[in-house]
Length: 117
Image 1 (tube, rainbow, N blue to C red):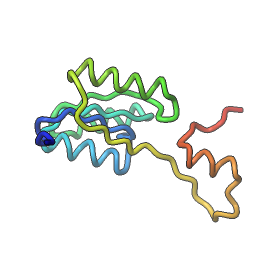
Image 2 (image 1 turned 90 degrees about the vertical axis):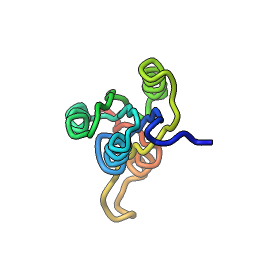
Image 3 (image 1 turned 60 degrees about the vertical axis):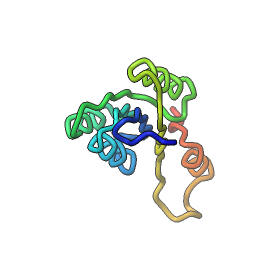
Image 4 (image 1 turned 120 degrees about the horizontal axis):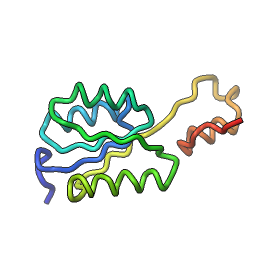
């Protein structure tokens, strides 16, 4: 049996924008306790300000296993457990398929951070 949304502790990873942001806002509006994780500090702050109820935020990188684990640990510490994990982190590359270098295409698939010079 699933608990009603209003009784759930939910982690939304990728909450800085797009579907992740909409998911975090909708879950908060329906009464869930939300831990919103993403890369963009400013976007997470604006999400917390816009939410219908308090939302915990944490800056994290989806391509880094230790960062993902720290989000889970933080949610357990703050909420006592996790009922739902919505992992909607992603990146996009725009261009014609044949024009996208293989390394960039792989980065999109792996949701890996851009290589540093």
